[in-house]
Every structure is written in structure tokens, then in C-alpha cells.
Image (cartoon, rainbow, N blue to C red; front, top):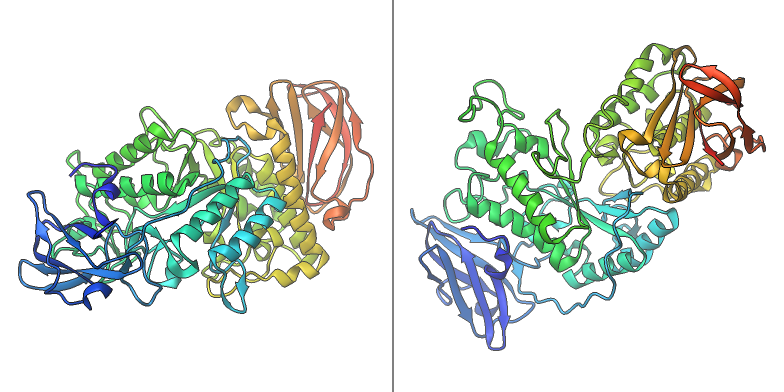
Length: 592
């Protein structure tokens, strides 16, 4: 079955005189629909099977809001109660039935226009803020989260998966419902309202989406009609030993249709602005998380999963075919070539730059006295910055499972930890790639993120935390204004000084046409007065940002803003400006 809008063909469909149910279960012996409308009696509403394995039937007294499941009898007479894979809504956990639903919401606002200054606020809706320990609803989040994101200047909200999932502790990454927004926070129309208000405020919404594996809960997709319908029948390709979940069968046309239909559903029905595809690396390689002897090479004798590669190419092609402004982002952590190549590669718009993330965090964990010997590791990230179109992720994965919060990764005592964190974030906004911060990173909370409690908003009673938050707001504002920081091609970058390892200083320029911004990073614990900064063009350079400014609760209260260049031959540069550098600080100087 090859159809990329299967949601028009399968699921429950309300008609004036009842509801039509359609489910694909080609291997089943019999299928009934059971629900509120027939007291879950398997004998009352048996469905009929067509030639291609779709079971269908009409239930006259079924209506919107009724819960239902499919009662499936396998060929060997085993019996299952399954939720509808194409359900548009589901019961609140721990209940697991599907709900008949037909949206009445009409969107009022258009999607925001595509932009270069993509700055993403990654959010887990259940733990951003809570009402007396309970989840905020989609309505509450519309009032509070959208307002906060707009005030902070982020361009996008990326939602950890809101596709329906049974277990809170999976954070949404073990799904059972690929067409239904989780009922934890409200109805599908209330979620649409949340998206609409985001768009009203110029904020794009990115959905974290999981086609790499699915939950093994009995009411879900596993062994759906008694046989492996959604998962690969061979456990070496169909079971994920690390995540204890099932892997989709990417060799199946039906599964490819199911997944591509899911992606298009969120784009066309919910008007989302982007999809971040989770676990791409696990999809690409047959030996991912497997030991020798636990996998078999493909027909060419290597470890690539050819079916998954074909699926990802088809996914991106079909999304982009009619949705030019939707951004597709890959969470991919290997050296696989061409993830963002639209012609020969996988066709994503962006890839998470996990190398940058790891190298940067490792560097900032070091005591400044030990940084000179690791300067090459810092400089190395510039060598691969243009290999793909990147997003720089400081994501949820970095602040869980005993890894420590971002502020607690930083070396030094209290004041130096904050100076280091401000420097790290400033370096991210200066570096090539779109930006992503997980919620709580922007307030430098000390505790690791935990899905069962809200962020530690009380830290904002303290000036150091206020300073970090204000700095992120200012960085988003500068990023939105300065095209030299937005474009990430090789032509938009020039080294000024990569060789001052002994002082842990690097200097580079971001360039867009006639616009230039010189970035000076002093990652040492020392001050340097009258430091010579090589620049390309003669002129006046205005200080537009200083991570150590007193307004961010830093140490620098110097009010000098404009620095005039003088002739001075340093390497390939013919001019320089002379500045004072405080410890652990990043400064942006714009050519006037």
C-alpha cells in the first residue's frame, strides 16, 4: 500500500448517520470495533475485509467523543484489543482507548515566514511550569509559554514529542499514537489554538517526531494483527536492544506510507512549522547498538539500512514538495555524509551538530589553566562547521541522567561558573549554525531537568540567574538584527587569530556582504589590557555585545563603545583595534 495521505483512508470518520471505521489488518482472521456505543461487545459490530486487507464498517449510534478500540482475532485465534493507529484523539492515560474526534477549529493566523535567525526554545510541556503540581493545559500554556517565548526573542518552540504515549518517563519518545496530540494537556482543538496563538505572535512550532522506534505497549502497534505489521519481522532489524522498543519495518511500503502520512498530517492538519526527526543515526545503521553477530550486512556487504535511507529521502521529498517553508531537522550524531544534501543525500534542511556540542561542553568543563593544551580541540570544530547545515543543540539530552545542569558543567567557583556559562552561550550565538536551548538553560538552573517537576523558576530571585536570562534575550535580539550572524556559509566566516592558545583567546569575523562583526573570545581566567585584535577592514568598530557586562551581572563596567582601527600587519590582516579583555568573556564588535 503506497499512499502518503493514509489519514484520509484509515481511521474513524463521522457521518450524519454514524461513524465509519477503517483499519488495515491484512493478517487478521476477524476484526470488530468495540466502544462506548456497544458496551465494548465484540460480537455487535464486526467489520468486513476488502482485497487489500482493510476492514471497514459503519456504526449508526457511534458519535464524536465515544471511546473505541479494535478487537482483533489473529489467524492462530489469539485475541487483541488495539487502539486505532490513525486515531485523532485518545483517552487520558492510564486509559488507552481511541476517541472519535472531528476538529471544528479554524486557524486564524498564517505560519510565520521562513527566516535565517532560527533560535529554538526546546520545551517539555509537562514540566515547563505546573499548576499546583498538576500539568498546565494547552490553554494555560497558550497564555504563559507563548508570552514568555516571545518576550525572550526565540523564533521557534520545539516540543518534545506530544504524539500520544503511555509512559510519562519516556518524555514522549515511546509512542502509540502517531496522529493524535497527547490528551494529557487537553483536546486536539486546544492544541491547534496553542499553535495558532504561536503563529499570531510570529513563533514557529517544531514537532519532535519519532519514526525510529515505537512503544511495545499491548494496545499499540506491536504485532498489530497478530503478526509484525509495523515492526520488522526479523528481531535483528525490528527490535531496539538499547531502547527496549520496536523498530519500524522500513522495507515495507505500508510502513513508509504510515510514517510519511503522519508527518504530513501534523503539517497540513496542525500547521506546524518544522519536524525534528529523532534517532536518525539509529535508523541509518544496521549495527546500531548491536554487538558482532547481532546484525547482518545489507546486500552490498555494509552496515547501512537501505530501507531506512530510502524512507528518509522519500519523507523529506514529500514534505518539501508542497511545504517549502517547513524545516526538517535530523538528530544525527555520526559522520554520515549528505544529511542536508537535497540532491544526493537525505534531504534534511538541518542536522544537529553533536560534534560542536560535545567539543564545546568538554572545553568549558576544563579549568581555564588547562585550556591552552585543548585549544586545538576548540579550533577543530571550525573545520567541520560547513560540512552540513547545522543546528547547535544544548538540548534536554545534556541535562539529564546525572550529566548535570549546564551551570554545573562549568568549571570554577560560583562567579566563574556564571562567567563561563555566559561565554559558552555567547560563543554559540557567534558560531555558525542555528541555535537551540532547552528550557531552564536560559535561567542557569542548578538542578538537572526532571520530567515530574517544573523548572526552578525561583532561581530568578538571584542576580546572577537574572543576568543569564537577560543576556539570552539580548543575544536573540542581536541575532535577529545582524545578518552577519545569521548566514552560515563558508563565505560568512574569516579567521582573525586562531593561534593565541597560550592565552586561550580566539578571534574571528562573521561577514555578510559589507557587514562585519569581529568576535573576540577570552576563555582564560586572566585579564588582558591593550590587546591587539586583528581585523580586515579599516574603520570604527562599535561594541554591540559583551558577555561580561555589568548588566548581565558580570565584572566589566567600562563604557567605551567605539574603537577606531589603526594600520598593523598581523598575518593576513592589515588593521587592528586595541581593547581590554576581562576574564572568561566574549565580545562582538561591529564595523560601522
